[in-house]
Image 1 (cartoon, rainbow, N blue to C red):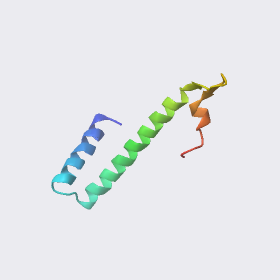
Image 2 (cartoon, rainbow, N blue to C red):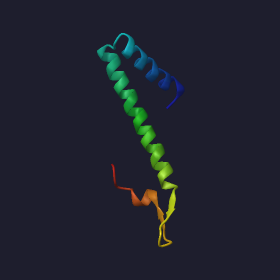
Image 3 (cartoon, rainbow, N blue to C red):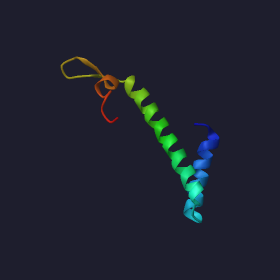
Length: 72
């Protein structure tokens, strides 16, 4: 997500608190938020895929593989 979209999200949030949004702006805000959340989830998935945990029995579990199908 580029800086312009992040700035627009913040601009719409400020305007929403100050004076309210039109229906078009509400739709734009919802789409930008959806896109942002999708990106955050993708980044978190990438981080989980690179984390290995050593279990008490000495085995190594990759969190990405362990939670691959959960939460989707």
